[in-house]
Length: 307
Ligand code: AMP
Image 1 (cartoon, protein in one colour):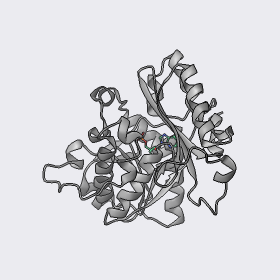
Image 2: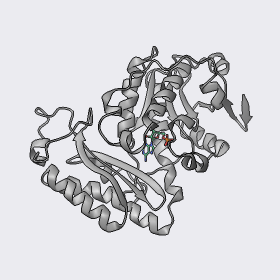
Image 3: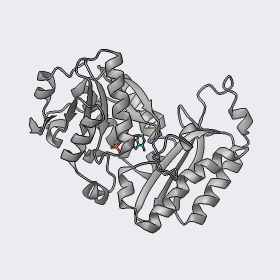
Image 4: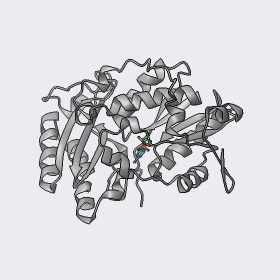
């Protein structure tokens, strides 16, 4: 157990048990390098813990999960700022920081994964296609963390939509079965979704990066799926980013949507109760960015934002 100023950082399973965390907390899993997007999730989780009288409050994990990096370079250059992150998380309302070693999450005697990956993590041709092995690594770490922390609720950002859906599927297969709660995407003032990877953008790339959220806004102004696809591609390509996908899908399972579907039809909640999601991914210089929004309209594209 590390004590930094007034903070306590837990590292082991035994410490989690001694602190009374199990089945008595809300949970925000992160890889650290915290920004306002993470801090909003922590505020939400802290309020939820109070609302449900959960004695251990909000637990924030800070763990750079080697299993979910498909590029060694990305793993190596991922920022690691434990003390500063712990301070920020506590200020946002976290009661406990859990920062385990790799050997604590993946001990040699750990049982093999018992999670069946849902098709939404293997078939849509989104993160599953462009980051082979990534979602398997996410499922594995979430299974381990849910089994170690046993939270009542876990909060995930809508920013990583496919991951959010996967978290729901993993949670449903874990004995603690936490309820997964989504948190809105927090954006910079020009609309760029906050991300730990934004730190890697140089001035040119930072300007180009704005084209992802701008493409989502174009899609939301388009009258049909077909026209939305065309508008996104044109906008992102003319900004000079390398598009991996720019697509509208059913929000709950990421399956394909007919290209002739009109925005007016998509607004019919009785016909489409789960709604639609517009999702983009692109390489901006050496950095890969993703973003998404509800289609055909999403309040996060205009707010909440950093002013
Ligand atoms: P990460 O540390 O990148 O693994 O992210 C930890 C959590 O923060 C995940 O649930 C992400 O979806 C969420 N997150 C990342 N960026 C944002 C953002 N801009 N707004 C809201 N949540 C976010």
